[in-house]
View 1 (cartoon, one colour):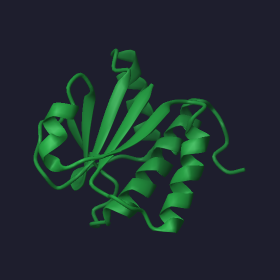
View 2 (cartoon, helix red, strand yellow):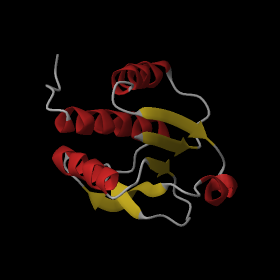
View 3 (tube, one colour):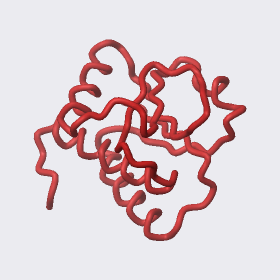
View 4 (cartoon, helix red, strand yellow):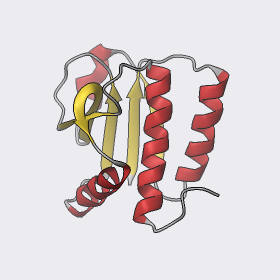
Amino acid sequence: MKINIYTKTKKLLSFYSDAIDEYHKRLSRFAKVKVIKLSSRELDKKLIGTYKIKVSSTGTNLSSGELANRFQDLALSGHSEVSFVITNHSFNYDEELALSQFNFSDQLSLTVLYEQIYRAFTINNNLPYHK
């Protein structure tokens, strides 16, 4: 599966960057994940042909297991590319996901999203999460 994460974050603080690098490395055995930095004006043009998930505090709350099931459902229904968009701007999306009801910075949202994607893939592959 190909996963794109769109964010307006230009530069990450080092501790966020370190965590994301670790999750990116771990996820590489399951999926191709790419972080794409862009402005809200470019969104609709970039999101053609992908399943679009808006990440916000007002979306649907899913457990790790439910997110894992969601990835399986998307794959089984023929969606080989999924795009998560961390933004407050409006655009045409297929579903809206909340990481929490709290409002997080884009940097923290990106880190938590990476962790939850990794957790979903470990669940789907019957792997222990903790080393």
